[in-house]
Length: 319
Image (cartoon, rainbow, N blue to C red; front, side):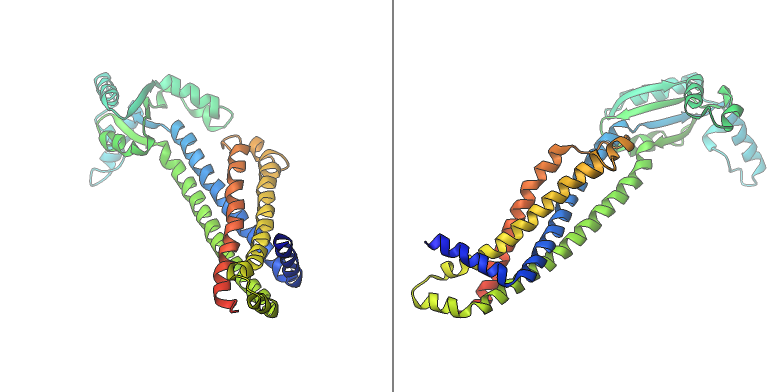
């Protein structure tokens, strides 16, 4: 009988404040959708970092004869003796220098593997990638640079290799591919932080709406709650319908948020827009990651309104 009474009171409360309940549901749905989206975004960025950083190499380009000639001409034409690549002024890289560089690389504990690419191999790879362009016809093998492609056990420590080899005789440049993709991840992190900021604003709006809804509901039923107190009902028993009203509204909003997350995965990533097929360079998350976030969304959607209602009732439900 008591359970039936509580359920009937919940229905009455939701119908009395229908517009505010609807506003609570929408606010909770949007804020929790952003919450789930920010969790997925953080996981996606971490997944992309692991994918791209594992493929990123540190490339050590060696001086060739053309580099040495250009550096010498630049030094002669510059009043201060500068200009050009200073390390190439002493000539093209020698076999002894190449052996020294390779042995030092292999001796470093953080280096996973070292691959040597000759000028002919570099020319072949260049033609495979850019052979269709007009510039490719003017490039000759002797203009290409020999290089060492270094894969690190921990890509985040690329600066150790850069500082150890940059500026040495025979080395033209030390290029880290990780630097090129850091800017992309920085932008993605900023977007994620913006989503989190909007989520927090929406959560605050939802909490304020829940508090006002509970306040109006408690005021409209102050006579009933007064009678219940007179006949011996406990404070908790009086508060339960109000807390349940907020919890039901929050749960409905959480269900809508789950629908939005699932729809985003289905229509944006897998089908519809089909980003997974159109952007194959990105290792998009699967359904397992999305479904794993839904329990968190439902739990917060149930807990947050209940706690907000409980706190509001301590202030506004004076019987």
